[in-house]
Length: 159
Image (cartoon, rainbow, N blue to C red; front, side, top):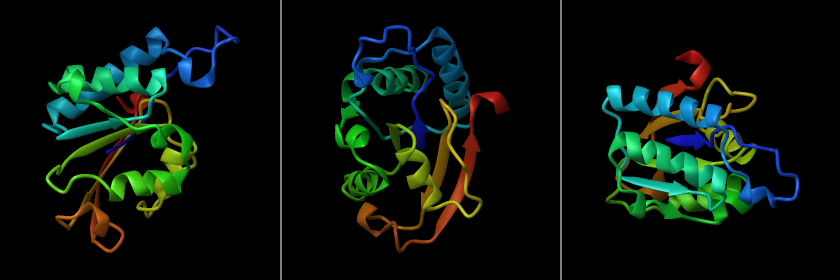
């Protein structure tokens, strides 16, 4: 699952980009999407998040609603600093025993990475959006060659 972080605040112009917190509206919209996943029994084996505050806070909301331990969220700076190519490297290096992984990142990279697998490309992933893709392989490094299935694309305005 590829997730764009929730709507964040621009109120404090002195903050570094990676320090921006979530807006309350962003939190509630993310919770709505997380409940959608829970109702469909979609639970991650691993959550990987950018180190940016807004992404990590988003990951914690999903973790809370989906019963995933906060302390097991894997923080990876490459999710923040890299483009789609960096996200590929993160995804292709995931542990093979983890079947359902949620990666929480940022535009434009998260949209570009999702579009590598989507037949109907999207212009951008809205905040709190989730793109879920299944691959017919047991190894993460093999996903570029594996057959795939788009499970769903969901974002708050759809719910």
